[in-house]
Length: 229
Image (cartoon, rainbow, N blue to C red):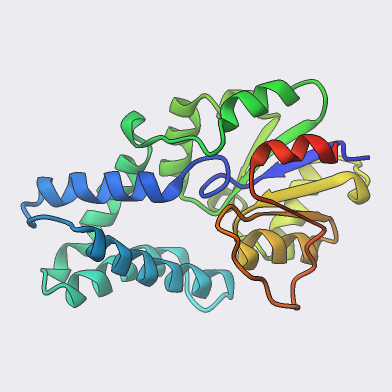
């Protein structure tokens, strides 16, 4: 029986790609950088993902990846890379803007429907500034029984130290009753494997996973969680 859900935020409860596009395009207009096309955003997303993997693997620090991704992106587009740090700071704020919030699979009402039935916690590698704002404006934060952000804990998913601090905060809990739900194999699923809890891969795009991951459940719509409880 599952009594505790650990929800990833970006890419699971909230559509991060939509927020990313809106935030970057706003800042391109603000900095007078010209049009930010879909192809440019696709190139940025690829660079961004490569940097987050380095963070998850412990190869870079969060400050390094946050600025480095924009530095590389601007250089690849022939833009002024010296604004990367300032651009990133403003980007964190724009990510949480109300008009950048898009729910995945009506996640807000799903979380509401599960209140009182299971304990629900947000577990995220996103920055404190971005996540605090988006969780508040989306209404998701107030529905959670707790929020765990890697910047506050000092460790990123999938590190076991991240989950150890989560469990310390939760108190006595049977790990066989804890399920992490997330879209990232390298962060959420590997993290769940490291923590020896149940894993649920949110995979709406029907991607393939390697044999190195233990995936207990795979869903393409968040409402499929209801069948697991």
